[in-house]
Amino acid sequence: MLPPTTAFLPEITFQTSRASGPGGQNVNKVESRVELRWHLMDSQVLTDLQKQLIMEKLAGQLTTDGLLLLTAQDDRSQLRNKEIVLARFHELLLKSLRRPKPRKATKPSKGAVRKRLEGKKIQGEKKANRRKL
Image (tube, helix red, strand yellow):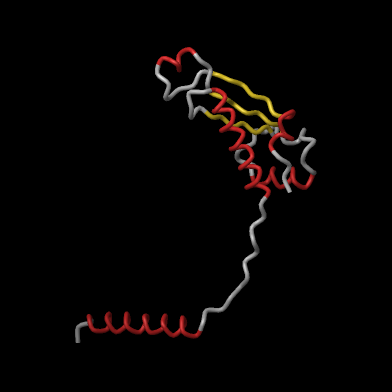
């Protein structure tokens, strides 16, 4: 269904910057934050139908130009952050291409209906007993 993440690598650009968070003095010196940029409509890997599905599902995460931006600054290592952001990218694509299973309408069982009605009757009796005579 979805090609491996390596098929998208030529279409992805990475940008690094200094991260905030764990790392101590390392944070001030090393650009460990990784930003992934991927343009959905320019993708040669996906079909038009897949692009449309992704466009609908990720509408809130895409820019007006159809650019997907993901960042990772979880780790001290730039390489590890790159792996993390690639994993997020792949997971996001998989989730957006997955179609939900259609719901089958079912009727409640006779026992469930009887139990619900008994519960309502008991509740009504409780309230009736609270009334002043």
